[in-house]
Amino acid sequence: MAEQIMSDGSDPNSVRRVVSVQAPPEVAWHVFTKQMGSWWPLAMYKIGKANAVDAVIEPRVGGRWYERGDDGSTCDWGRVLMWEPHSRLVLSWDITADWQYDPALQSGLEVRFITEGDAGTRVEFEHRRLDRYGDRCDEMRTIFDKTGDWGQLLAAFAQTAAASVRAST
Image 1 (tube, helix red, strand yellow):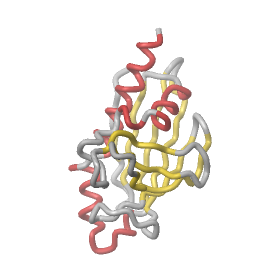
Image 2 (image 1 turned 120 degrees about the horizontal axis):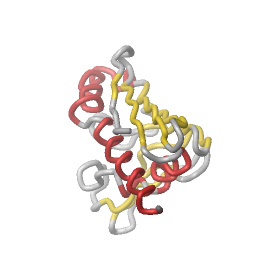
Image 3 (image 1 turned 60 degrees about the vertical axis):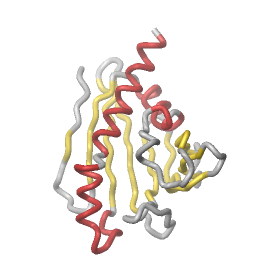
Image 4 (image 1 turned 45 degrees about the vertical axis):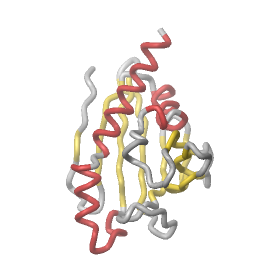
C-alpha cells in the first residue's frame, strides 16, 4: 500500500492529514515518538540558535517536546497532553508565528495510530486551534497546510517507519 497524504479543509482553525504507513502501530508509534530526530528535517525546522541534532518527546503526560542542539542546549516546542502508547498522542504546539516558544500559545497536535490491514497503520494528524495565532492565523494555516506542510513531514515519517520494518526483516 502506498503512502497517502490527504487534507480536509473543513475547519478553518485546523489542518488535518492522514497518512498510510507500512508498519504496525507499535512501530509507527515508536518511530514517531522515540525517533523523531530521524525523520524531522532539523536543519530547516528548528527554533534554537544551535544546530539541532534531535527532536525529543518525553514519554509521559506533562513531558516536554523539544529540540536539542549540538551544544547541549534545548528549545521547547510544547508539552505532552495525552500519552496513549500505540494509539494516541496529543501535544501542545507552542511556537509562535515568529518561531519563538510561548507556552501561552497552546495550539495543539493530535496524532492517532489506527491499525490498517495486517501490518499497516493509518495515522490521522490534526493541528488544532490555529485561531490562537490571531491576525496571523491565515498566514500560519498556509505554512502548516502548504508551504511548511505537515504532509511533507508525515510523508518523511511514513518512509522512515516503513524502512524500519524492512530493516528488521
